Structures are given as structure tokens and as C-alpha cells.
Amino acid sequence: MLVRLAWAWTFLIASWASIVASKSPSVFYEMMSAYGIYNIAWQYKGADQRYIYPLLDAERDKKLVEESYRQQGHRGSLPNGKMNWEEFAAAWFRDDSIDPSRIPPLDLDNIEATAKALKAVKEPRMVPIALASGQLPVKVGGNVQEKKYHELLTEWMNMVVEARERLPVAPMRNDLKAITLANEKAKFIRLTEFRQTQYLGADLKRVFPGIRILGFDVAIPEFEKNYKMVDVAKTLSDPVNKRNMPDILAKAIGWHQLPFDPVDWKERFQLLVVEYGRETYQHSETKKLMSKKEREAQRSALSHRKVLEAVKALKEKAQDTPACQAE
Image (cartoon, rainbow, N blue to C red):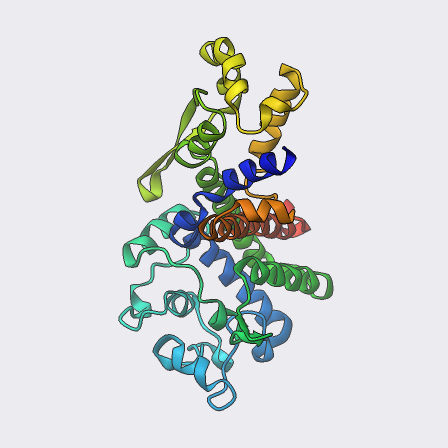
């Protein structure tokens, strides 16, 4: 019974993340944050920094140089080969047809306008991990393993914390501000995507047949997008759901065999919404009940949640400085 319950909620978190992860417009804000991180890495280690878009060596990093934007190996026009914002964004897009002159200025007083202008240049794409980290995928036990995006974000965050502890904060002021502002927007968009009625709501209706999911609208005007998010409080207090609750619980996958009262059910329901995409189940019997497609989707969902958590952590760490608190 408990295995069946675990499978039901494993499927709940697994059904959609692969649709969203690589197409999220939050990427434009993550790009702005990354340039702040890049600047701090150069302040910390100079041209020798290997944290983010490091300078590539034509011989040692031959394959990466060949894959880099216009095969420039991340060399920019600033002193010692550092890239300016426009060159950095072009390197992220990794599209040789996009000249840096097409990249809009980075305006920290209106990052929404910058994000909108970036989208006009090219649709969102996830950062090329190998190029951004300066590390090719490695073979482990016969399998090729590439660094995950959330792992890269965590490494960047740790570098920012380390640099902040060892260097004067004042020169980092604008970059910490960029990281804070951009990740606040990225977090908001990713969380909004995560809680949409067409994903979370559809999964809840599958697990709880007959439940009526209520939502509310959230607009992202810079991308001309509107999302409908699950309204948990209204869904649970909805008169129709209250009237039909005995029948809903009787049909709910796995739940009707567990002892609980309505209050416990509401609390558990709310907790599962909050934890959506965070939990994974390792029970061997649970794995047997999942198809290959469900297991792959589960990994995508967990990865998307980890990116969300890493984005939130970056924002919090960057904000936790006298320079940013004074803003």
C-alpha cells in the first residue's frame, strides 16, 4: 500500500518538468546574474579564474574552443581578455550569427526591459554547461557524465561567498546587486512555472479524481506571458470540493487506505504542494511500478526543482551583504 502511495506521488512530480526546463524565460535573468558572478570571479582570481567562462587554451582546451562562440575561447575586448556584458551574452547564446552589437545594454534599474530585449534577440536557451564551466563531460564507469546546471549554480554561489569573505565588498557592489535582482526575478518565474494548473493542477486531479482545482492569474509582462497557478487555499475551501470530499478521498490513489482525518489531509495536501518536485522515492518496489518514461521525467522534475533551489540560494547569498542590504 505504501509503495503504491509513493508511486502515485512520484508520478505527480514527474509529469512535466522536461517541458519547461530548457525553455523557461527565467534564463534571461539567470544570464544577467551569471555576468555578475563572472565579474566577481575576475575580481577574485583575475584572468586565471576557472569558475565561469574561463579563458580557454587553444591546445589544452581545443574541443571547447571549437565549440565556443566564434571559436574565440571566451576572449573578450576588455583588458587581459575579459568579456564585457555584450560579449558574455553572445557567448551564452553561442550563436555565431549574433554579433555582440545586437545585445541590449544591461540596465540594473530596469532588468525587465533588458530581459525583454534579450528575448527579441533569441529565444531562451539553457547555458552550455561544458563551456560555462570550462570542463568537458567525463566518463565514469562507461557512462558520460556532464555537470548539472544546479551543480554549476551551487559552485558559482560558493565562489561568490568565498570571494565576498576575502575581498573588499565595495568593488562587488553592482555585481552583487545584479545577482540579487536577477535571481529574485528568476526565482519568481521558475516557481510560477512550477505551480501552474496545467502541470501541478492536472497532476492533483489525476491523483484525486473529481477534485476541482482553482487558480489565479500571474502575468509576466516583459515576456507577454500569463500563467494560471494553483490556488491551494481556495481549492481546499471550495464548497464543491468540501461537498464531494468523501467521494474524492475514496477514489484518491493510495490515500483511502490510510488513517487520517480531514484536517490531517489538508495539511498533508498542502505539504505535498510545497514539496512538489523536491522528493524522490528510492524504494525498489516503487521503481518497478514506474515506466522508463516516468523515471526519466522524474529525474527531469527533480533537476528542475534543484535549479529552483539553487537560484533561490544564489539570491539569498548575494543579498546577505552590507552592500546589498543598504540598497
